[in-house]
Length: 609
Image 1 (tube, rainbow, N blue to C red):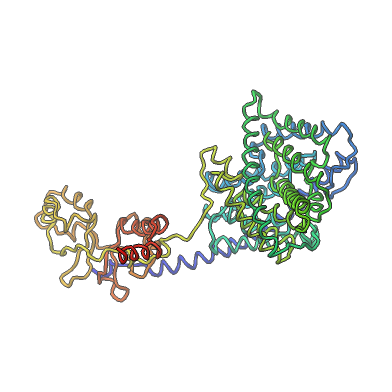
Image 2: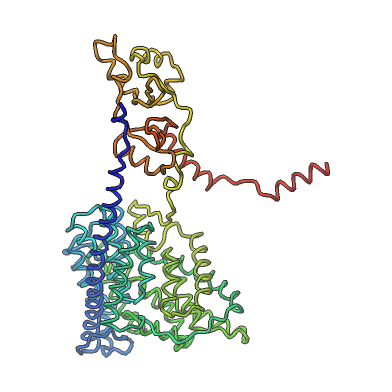
């Protein structure tokens, strides 16, 4: 009988080897995706530069210019309008997925489409973004590049023979590579993919992400130079004396991030309620942008040069106030109208201006404060977007990678987490997930180790295992079940033992019912009706692994046996026992334990009483 009692160790070893082989394959694919995404990022930025130079300066050049010194005069009002009309036509007759800033669309593909993105998105998204930004849209290229990179990863994952989970990793690799190739911030790109797309941290995802981001950044080095996107002079962060001011800035950034997200979606709601074909709304947003850009040309285009100027304290207070007011207004009207463009760069500009304004006002009100506007601009830039997107860790690292100054770490950490804490009090969803929530999709942006992968079977198994002898007649068992005998009704399955008390098989209530349909029950034993081909688990095995075996084999219970003797019964693991491990985690999260102070107070009251 023992040859039927088995735990397939060879299969487990083979599964581990296959997993390692798949990781190697994923890493190779990630390398290819990283190189392609790096090239695509360069081409998109160059295309934006070409369109911007042709439209605003009537010249052929590939660098992305600042548009505040354009030569169009009043014609600047029409340029974003025409760009918006083109985007509307592309969205209607090409793909509606080109609308928006890119990252929520990549998240949606992960959530509801098994990480599948149509090839048309990989083509139309960068072209639409180049047109929108090249005609004055107040966006960055990073969101579209992230979505385009994700689409490339998804397409590769649809071509080759892999699982949906592995395709998700490739999608995230493309997205991370796109961000790394844009900003030359490979570490932040990896963390962004984990925080916003994967929600997991395991070798299967981390290793390919690092490979893709590293190679994409290498492409950036070769084609766009080794420096980061923003060149920042050395900054004085004023630690520890400036900590009180950083705390106040964190509160302001959290409130602003909340308002930033809510206003953006309110404007989007207004556009959606217009009695017009959605094809026309980007043109309306473009017209409004053109009017704003005529009076405040600095709001037009990507504005990387303006961000650099803010970080280096090259702009006066009046211009900074204008950036916060009019860049925000331009962003809300255009992105809310349904055009195509990235959210990161404009939010960075607005957050940086907010931080610099704070420092300048404090210096005016408190002359001895001597706050560095550039330092507070850097911190504000990271805090506003980190709080709005709930990717705080990503943008702490992002800002650090920009300056490469270790002194930035403490203020970045403090301000960003305070801003995040404030934003969480007022926003149920982030600026990335609000759109998905409105479509009925809930994104769980927190992740933790699975308790089932931490608890061994021995901690949750039932040691009081009901056993029945292999010689028992099925008719006798059926009678005991009918009488409600708790020794045989407590579990759906019963362990069958031989004369020596060793495991011989398992019988379930379903087995009993099927056997009772037979006409001859006089000599039918429980072992005849049950099964001797039994899957096992061990007390030192993780509950996760045991549960996986149960699900894959469609069984509801596993005998727990000794590794030295697979027929020696130690316990019983059922579905209820698995849920016990989950209940333990819930209790750890929700049940408050009495601390020392209440107990000491109780003892003191007893003594004095």
